[in-house]
Length: 236
Image 1: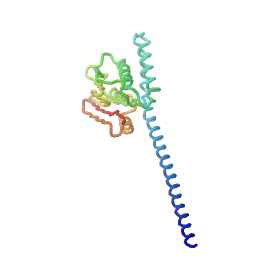
Image 2: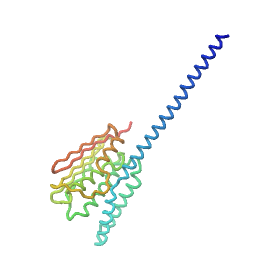
Image 3: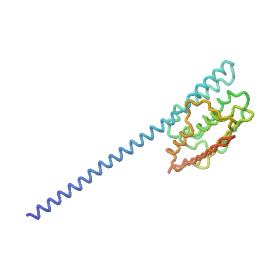
Image 4: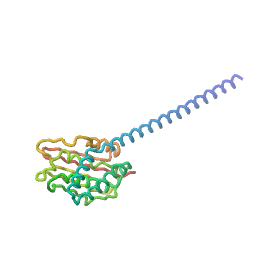
């Protein structure tokens, strides 16, 4: 009889231990899932915050430029209104998507440059090469324009005699290669300091979006600023 009691106690204890382990496992799994969900929510929130830091000062300048064109009854006015509308559509709606076509990023860059050129007295030395780019390639939005903004903010492109800007966007299969370089003034300037995504912001986004799948090199000399960025957009 004692043997039976002992065996029963052992079975009960074993069941309690197994049950305890199972409950602990469930609790641990739920806790881990909750931690992962919170981490994903945190990353998603931070990504939205980083993308939201679009330069509002550009919008004010663009509207002022369009107003100035309308005053002189320039033929460019309707076209510039459409360009600004397209840019706003991209930043307010399309950039909320996780990915956009490279072609839409290029459209935004080209329109941005057109607005910058309105303020210049003569044609600036700006070259944009997209001849070897697959515009259908999908990337996360608003990764390229901050470097173009930076070129106009800190460069001397307004100096149409000495200033220059070169942009190249090309693709090799799933690889996106982006290069931008611009001249710098002899004396550093800091204009349009309100807003803007900023280079460090982009670097942080790249680390989140393309871990171990991107390369970003920035080189600054006394007379020029150069950026080389390569992104492997392939998803397993």
